[in-house]
Length: 270
Image 1 (spheres, one colour):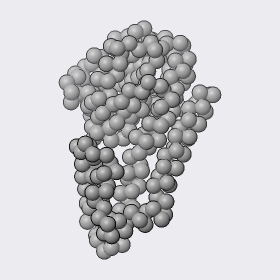
Image 2 (spheres, one colour):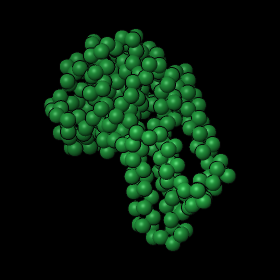
Image 3 (cartoon, rainbow, N blue to C red):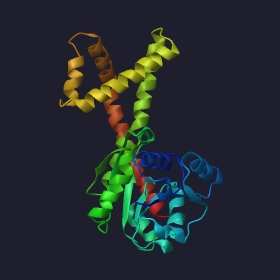
Image 4 (cartoon, rainbow, N blue to C red):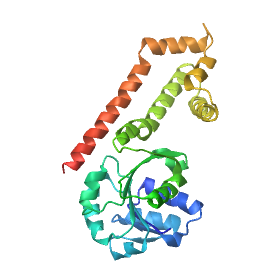
């Protein structure tokens, strides 16, 4: 499969690197970016072909990944539209809805919308996918092959679920980092060094997450098994409950989903 990327940012780099590790030849990858520094960085790192402009060369590629900022996607899509024939178009631009993107592409509908997250940079991402009805089984398989090099993936039946995905897995790494920061702060207040605090907090999250992945038990059961009645964990969880920590986290994620929906409205109205 030959794949072109429009945009050379971090997520494009994660996918290009993953594709090469999974056996895709550099000669089958093509990067278009008007930013000379970003383009040269990708070329120097991966030895792929590149260009500063969208042109007829895209006819040689099976898929086009749109990895530009949402605010730039309309202009990029309009420039891309004349060069589309049967290519699969995959957008990883947050917030831009399929209907709006298809309109900007001049009615072209072989389009998939993907919502990855930053752990894709280390091959442990989570990408949710939604497609128009013009994307057949082979198109879905191609999209899976591209995004799976950066981690797991999940298909949604309804694109509206991507706002929830944005709030949970898209923004979710920031919530995890926020909690890690809090644990590090607590460790420092308890007299541990900066390095010790960071090591303990990060290792604890990594281990707990891996246990959740490998265990067949519900998360609530795993939590209960760490929580002895009257013990240290119970004291901490009781303090969290008094401060309504769980409710605050839920409300934060709901706020993120609402903002994702608003961004989609704003971008579509442009």
